[in-house]
Length: 182
Length: 179
Image (cartoon, rainbow over all chains, first blue to last red):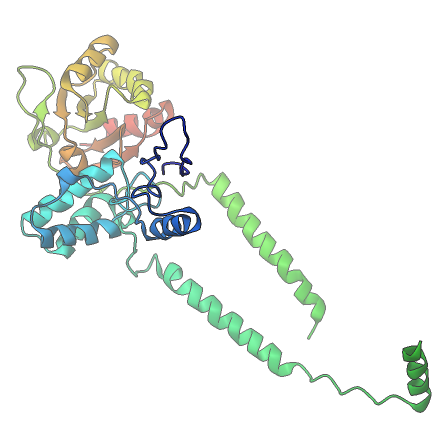
């Protein structure tokens, strides 16, 4: 990200020109607070930059949309946890190209995934399939939740309610009153 | 219920975690390893232009000669390739291994100059400039090395440079044993 540049105040030296390179200053009509709020708003709207380069795009928008969907669920094999659409790695670029080539050749989405899995294994899927080796991964969280929730519930039921406090005796009441008076 | 036993729970958790970490460290577990699905399957298609001028392109036929083959993806810009290069030279000259080298995303002129400088252990050499063959072989980078038996089945896949230990414990027994 480019560093945030502040609007330069009009100075007599440069003839009062504004710094038009700043997105906030462009147009010149926004000043101070309103300008910075707009900047924050725009910054929040900004989407993460994709690594997909314009030259890679397919001419058919429907096919390209499918390629993007697939690219988002394929894991780049050299970058731990990035999709191939997010990664600028060489291999990720080759994989994006292969996805587009397969789609252009008329493959269904499942066939494209199968093509990648045949070469890189389940590792290449950001959403791993449910099978013998992965059931702990899928069910572990819910199981822990259910077991812990059950134990908490049992513990809560067992807990005896706190008995109500006994009323003060006359002597205690007198001492309390004396203390409060001071 | 015996409440004191409850105090052992954190300790038991700690012991469990310590056990897992110890196993991870000592058993050489590599969470970044992506493994290989090619092992035990027929080698992917080999279809690349020759790296050296005037040689025919490389085809599948080279992998089904009845003799074991080593397929090595390399590049002149890759430092680990430089590190493993002497091992291939030795495998080719001393042990008579058939090694197929594929220059991955490497300009042929640069790959050839690299081989001229360091020596060329490859009986056949291909140039995969676009990385298409690499993708077919499930390549994640260079160097990677595949041991392919005489019937064209992948028997081993090394991601990263091979080491002296790999040569002695895996590659040499493979060359002797595979048919």
